[in-house]
Length: 436
Image (cartoon, rainbow, N blue to C red; front, side):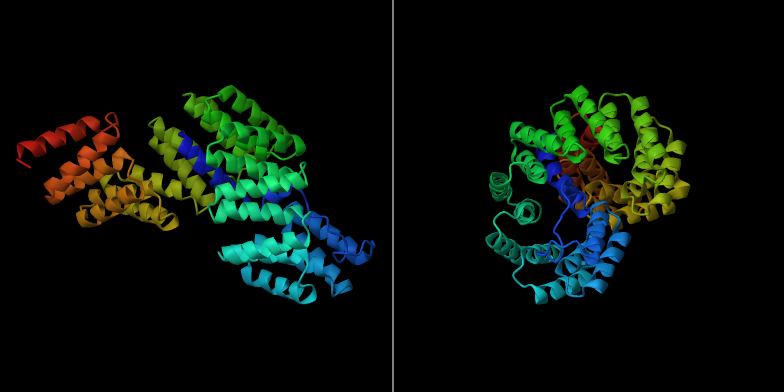
């Protein structure tokens, strides 16, 4: 795992967690009453039930409670904001917008309303407008940590300005040094900027402040893996699982560590344990299939990939690997092409998926389409030797000898020891003998 990969992974991890609604779990919003009244009315009680449901990911119960609150007090702002948050978590942008506009009409200058409005703008990729709304919210209430952390997250995740994000996270922590999500976000941004030591300190502090939350521990463990401190990483994942026994990423990452150590049996045990905890967890089947495939057990590998797809038809890796397995059998090339096309449709910018599709097309004799897919693969990732090796073969079979030579030389320059390196060298010699 390279340092550049870790930096990219830090941003990707935080982005995926935000999209899944996991990062806000550090601290539930406890705004009371009508965002000003502290009276414990029945409507307030329903509102608090809704916030608890929102915090725990129970969106149906949260929505019902917020609506019951509004039935009792139709002009409540906070319940409309709560309904907007529910809609955002569901990806219902238009519904969220309706609730936000209602809240804006009632309280156009309220901090919480502006913060949710900014999240809605960010979900529509209106980043500069979201930035302006968050700055307005902070100006209205400089102590509002949600707005400050949202602004830092916006810089880091959406606008790809890690240094600006770091500055805003640090400023937020000057306002409230004990705010866990600010430490967590700062740690992830520091990883992205290459400061592993600083990141470790921030993630450790986030974990100390929110011991029930496994996310800082997961990030710490991945940092240890990058440093090849595997035992410490495993211990850290054990802490994460103690905090949340059904935290599936910990099982998957522990499996990866065992694979790095060459222990397929322990890796399989982790994936099996994950499925015991959650039988519908498709990624565990994908990883088991990959272990079977590596061990040259194609039948078991295919069974695992099919199980993953049955549970979750969006598992692109499973489709890709099924295509690769099926392409070895001339009688299954149509099936292989269908699976490869499905993987590419799900994730068009994955170089490996385009590579598989091109290789399947080549097996079918569709050389022009094969070359196009492999050219896309090489453009998406110019550092994978296998892609250029495959492209060189297709070019050679098309009679494009000069381009074939260039592709094969590129493959060998990237990795002199990739599995097909000897064949690439032999093909280059043959091309030389032909005078090309």
